[in-house]
Length: 317
Image (cartoon, rainbow, N blue to C red; front, side, top):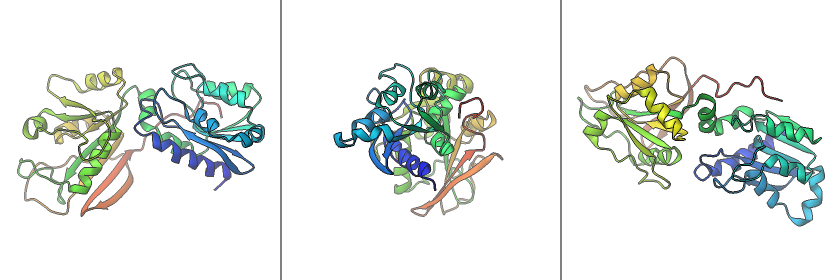
C-alpha cells in the first residue's frame, strides 16, 4: 500500500462518521500530512457547517502551522469551488499554501465537477486525482447516483425462508430476528425514504420507523395503482431524496426490477422452511456479490449492480 493510499483510507474512515449529519451533502474526510506525520484531520460533520478541509486545517496546532508549506492534504472528494452555505474549500487550500493535494474522486455536482481541481492547479499547487477512486465513489454512492442519474439510490430489501418464500401460504410471516431487525432499523436511519406496496400496507400496517436504532425516520411511502413508478421516482428526485429502501412484497420488487430501477439488493434468509407461500423475487442476472453474513441464525446477503456508479471519462486527472 502506498502512502497516498494509506492516508486516503484514513480520509474514508473519517468521512464515514458523517453518515447521518452530512446529508444531503456528501460524506468527506480530509487529512493533512507533513514529514509522513498527520498534523491535521477532519470530516464534514453536519450540513451547513464546516467542510472536511476547513475542520482539518482548524485542527492543525499552532506549532505545526509552519509545516503547511511542505504538506500534502488528502481529501476523499474534490474540494468545492463555489459559494454555498460555506466558502469554497479550494480557495482555502490555496490560501493555506500547501505543497500538494491528493483527491480521491471528482465531485459530480454540477457546480464543482473538476472546477475545484482546476482552481488549485492554476494556483501552482500539484494535484493528484483518483487515489482509491472506486472506494471514494462507493462511500458516496447515494450522492453520486442522485446527481449522475437524477434519481435516488435504490435498495431493494426482502426476507425469505430457507426455501425461498416471503410469507406462509399468503399470510404475513416473521422472518427477521432481534439482531437483524436492529440492522434493518439502522439502515432506515441511514437512508432518506422507504417504500412499500399497497398490499403490504393494508395487510401488515408496518410502522417503517427506526425504533430499534437511533436517528431520523425515513420518509414513508406507499406505492398504489394510481401512482406510476417512474413518476414516484421523479417526485423523490425533485424532493431531494437521495436514497430509497424498497421493502414491499413480490409485485412491488418486481416492478422495480423490471424497470431496472435498483442499485443494491439485500436478502435476509431464515433457516426454517414453509410448505408453500409467495415466492421471493428472482435476482437479476447482473448482480455482483457484496457481502454475506450470518447473524443470529439468519443470513444477510447483499448484492450490487455491475454498472459503474459514474463515468470517469472527461474528468481531469
